[in-house]
Image (cartoon, rainbow, N blue to C red):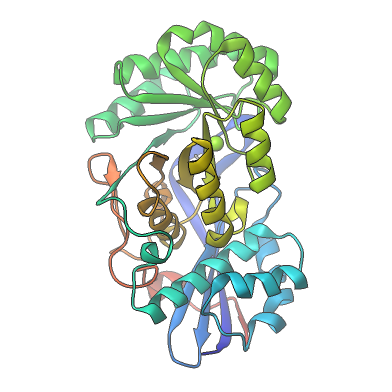
Length: 367
Ligand code: 0XW
Ligand code: MG
């Protein structure tokens, strides 16, 4: 079997609610890059990479040039056995995890199709009928966030991520956490996420002000040392996200004692091949996992749902249906949330079939 063509589309994803994070990071319309690998057997594999501007060291218009650089190694290669192909790509081009993530997903899609199996069967085997979701609440006025939380609670959501730090007012962040906790009542998991946008001082002040509310703090500061300081100063559980981006940093986060939970993101880690290894490491470490990606539509969501479906319950805190937050849906039949939970795609491979109408003509073809 050989890869005969690489096709790329730049697809603008528009948020249903403009999604505000700290330091002005915003998802209103974000460009996603969809990749398809064609083979000499007629089978096709799909991948996607959707960086959020200014969020991680990645940008949408960096994907196509990186893929073009990798094309001479990829074209003609046998896609079955993703890790072997990724080894060759990594030797040819170092870094660029976010671009390689789209290729890696497409390789896994093809490998699972050839095996006649759903992708989760190759990632460890299906462990769940469906998985718990969290709902991420954009950083707006506290009362509006509480309304959004209550609406999501009524729809069955029981885990809530409260975006913090949009205007750098720590007391407003205290109000956000208080109002959301009030809206959802005791019991649901609530965590406040600054996306690196707080000082250790202000995150400590927020943590101490809400310590009675049973909340977790997520990535308050840019450095692991600052996050570890906040965890020690507040005693509140902490989830790492931007600081946990590869095997070494996950081990470092565990050693620093501030990684009760971690966000495993597909494109941050370079794809399913790497993310599966880090998933298994987190299981060994006892770290609770959020299995997700940065942003994206149905292809990205399908890939992370297969990994979540193959992750034992003891390590799976939640997963994320990124396709819920944006339009267009690339595959109307792809999984959607149901009462706070979501099932992986059905069928063999990745199990998504992007609609040609939604994609239009490719923006680049490499063969
Ligand atoms: C909630 N997210 C998945 C959306 C953006 O990628 C940020 C991320 C997070 O957890 O920070
Ligand atoms: Mg986060």
